[in-house]
Each structure stands twice: as structure tokens, then as C-alpha cells.
Image (cartoon, rainbow, N blue to C red):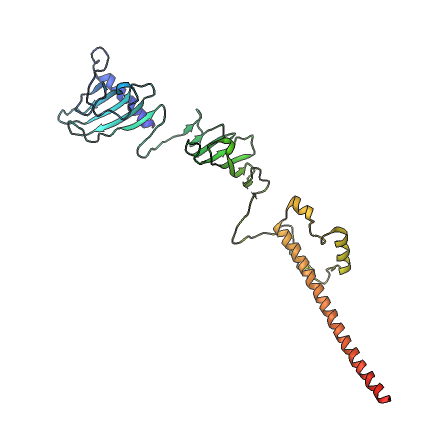
Length: 325
């Protein structure tokens, strides 16, 4: 854009320095912009080959021409705009050919309203949209949607979707926000992703208190949890472990309404659960149950052995009684 503006300025300066004044200082009117024209400034109404902007009455347009010195061809650079207040600026470079020149399409350079460009645009420098003081790179500022700035994708039609990338200023907790709206309205914006200045990420929530807060269901093929501050409960199987008696377990359940070292329902509803910690606690209870089962199995086997001895003794007593009769 800077290169184009600089080129236009040079052309105007060059034309003014090396051209004679046109009549009384006003551009002559011509009816065809595509035929071989000498260097100079012209105007025309509904002229042949005029630029696409027909917004002014009777399609009056200005034309600036820089013509090749060879009179046998129609090489020329043309810059044109309509005479309307909010006119657009166009340019084209004509090649040989007459009366209709080759490469006759006009290309828009700039306008005071909407700009439409054809081809790739390269800008070496900063770009500011909605701000007169652009930061490094691209700075898009829109105060209404976010406290700082935003980049928005979507159409101006209120029924179209809107996707916004936004960032807030240093006084806010939100460093970056991704939002969506089914109607192009601030009141209907749904926050999809929030990244706080502390590095916390929130999905479906705007105030993440952890490195990742998700307000919804997480579907994953695998979840790996690192246990920090918690030991894996294999200590239950060590000889020095004091395994509570079943009477002690029963007493705690009757008094507290839950297993020892397992959070209550109220605690879970209030604070949630830590998956790594809870898995360790549940495994501890499973290992304790395993020890209880082993103890009961031994007691059952002892009872079986005693029952077998009682049975043998009973049979022996019965035989002695039969012999005494």
C-alpha cells in the first residue's frame, strides 16, 4: 500500500513539473479513456473505458495519464476516480492496441469506504485497524467486544455466525479469549476458550482457577496422572501397617457416614475430587478389603478343620456307645 501511494504521489509531482498548464488550469473533457491519449489530466462523463465506479451523477470521472514517448503504441499508465465525495481510486497500465487497449481492466487502489483488492497484497510495516497507534505487526482494536482488542470473523448480517479472537488490557485477568455468536451481537457472545494472564486455560468457563478448567465432558483415549505428594498405597501390605479391625470400620461408618480417609458427599459436591488422589485412596481400601478377605479365608479354613475334627470325634463317640449296648 505504501509503495502504491508513493507511486501515485511521484506521478502527480512528475506530471506537474514537466507538463504545461492545461488551457486555463481545468482538465479538458474526453469521451474515450481507451484510445491513445497524451500525457495529462482529463475528465469525462460516461466515457468509454472509464473505471467501474459510477457513483457520481452522470458518471463524471477524473483521469491522469502518463503516455509512452513512442507515438506508435498506446503504452500508458492511467489513474482514475469518480468526482463523487467518497470516490474510489483506480489504476491500469494499457498496452499496445487501438481503439480498445489490451489490459483494459481497472484495479482498485484505495477508497474512503470499503476497499476491494485483486491479487496478493504485501505490507512491510505495522497495520492498525481501529487505532491510530498500531503495535508491532497486526493490531486490530474493537473496544465494544473486549476490554482490549479483537479479531472477528463473520459477516455484517446479524444472522451470520461470528468468531472472535480477543485480548484484554493489563488490568484484566483475561489475556486471550475465543468467542462465538450465532447473532452478530455482543449480548449473544458465547465464550469458548479463555486464557488468563496467569496461564490458566478455561473451556466453557471465563474464570479458570487451574491450569485447565473444563465446564463439560472430556472424551479421551487415555489420561495419565502424575501423583505428587501422594504415595501409592502398597504400604497396606507391609507388616508394620496397622489394619483397622472391622469393628473399627463399622464404628466409623456409623459415626461419619462414610469410609475413613474417603471424602464425604458434601465435600465432593463442594470441592470435586482429585483423580490421582482418589484412585490412590480407593486402591488403599481395595487392598484393605483384600487383607480382610485373606483373614476371613483363614478363619473359615480353621472352622472347617475344627468342624472336621468335631465330626470325627462325634463318629468315634457314636461307635463307643454302640459297643456298650
